[in-house]
Length: 87
Image 1 (cartoon, rainbow, N blue to C red):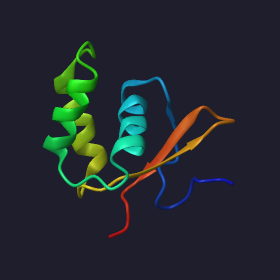
Image 2: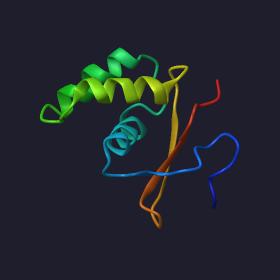
Image 3: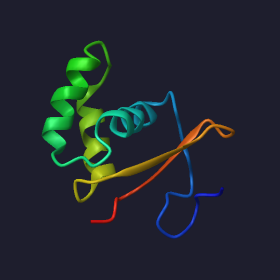
Image 4: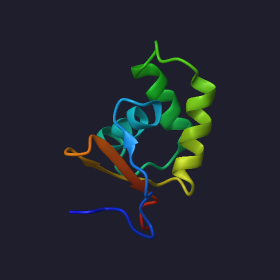
């Protein structure tokens, strides 16, 4: 089932990339995320050895946009696709 289109990001994000790890975390623990700061606190607690937290915070803010994100993992491609979740 293809996910690229107007609302989904056309380029998938590798699961093990920094953004991929964030998306996997959000998908597993915050399917409807409400607070970027709450997410970052919990993400840092669970990933204390994760490098470059400022970069992660900026990427999360960009990805979450309105505070909600929807991610879909395509196993065959080993990539996440993401979009803002509908309210």
